[in-house]
Image: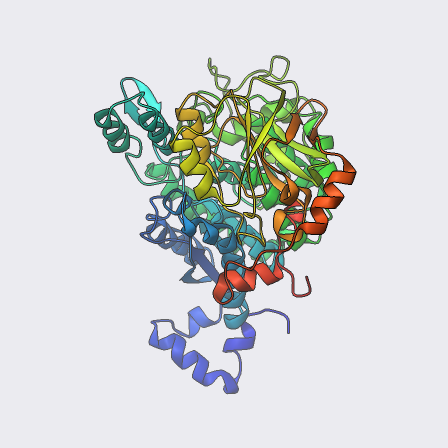
Length: 557
């Protein structure tokens, strides 16, 4: 059945349905118009999402005042920052699939004609856009906005500074009083984490791929422009119904290329790779690691953004936001400018229509003088990761690391070792059985990586995991190792003292153990018992595939 609200409200057989709508205050005039679902991921679990119910009301006005009937509904969102470092983080990536599935179910059940999606924290952004691609109804995405930075002793702080301060405190480098001051200062408002972490990365990508209005990614959550932008998003969705432009018209292969350019130009989160693969799958676009590497090698890294750099999203907003970045890239022929967007115009037409000044600034470097000549979202392959692994090189000075493995079969064991000072210069910390199936849920390792950085080891050790990293992670940290340990990938066979080499220039990650020895180890290896045998996590572990394909769930894995 083709999705259409007319299936629900037209004809005498739908009299009961109309009666239920009238119980909510709608009249026959409302019921004669197209229905647009206004979905938000608002809750009180996270500052990233706490304002979204209010923003949804603004989107509702934008829809209603432009010829359609809005219906607000919500779905879940997990706070990565609060779920971090414990068992709760296993729910984070899984929430991406639940968000996409729940939006699909709400829209299919009620036969809405279009979708406005409002999201704040990490997985809620790709989850919402995945649902839009899957349903392929006129849709517009809008970000809930970034948090303002905390200011302490003249320095801009983010929540990552608090995580790193924990490591510094454990190492005796700062006092408990200083740790408390950082804790009390770092997050002064609502909104998503301020650096170019995963939420701001995916918000930037939403503009680059054409699913969001130009300029919608950078205004802070509590900026008065945010309400106006959300209203305009509702209006734009109503207009898209007239234009009959759908997500798959927008999310073309070329649009995904633009997204990969953006990911690398701004030094975005490695989670962006995982999410773009999943979004492409929903849009019916074949995207592989080879595409990411091809585009990375021709894309300069030009944005000096935290965690590897010096600035937060609010600072980028002040100089023109993501359109300013897009303009720089387009001027040098690095974008496919003829890709259609939710405005009904191409990305180049959108940029041409915007008055984007050229202020004196140090946040976005000239294309001719970039921070790095190539992009920072690097895909590695080698004997330790035959299917691939990823590393973010923004802010990382070294390009090669060889060290001895220290192996931990869950993140908590590694964190405790770091806290006790058991990790030393030259070590390669290996955290395994944290992959999509093995965790399950592919936990982020921010608590552990930040502790290493806080102890002054960020440039002296490396980490390798089949789990993930927060967009706030910095250092020589390799994630998404595939095949993962739980399915018998080489990472399952690593022993303490094994030598591992990571080389970002040659894009190699190798375990220096002979094939004969690995074969012997494989013979004695057995798959561990699953951590969960019931509930959502067990279902996910059954359905999820490799990180190299985006850790997507399929009905026939």
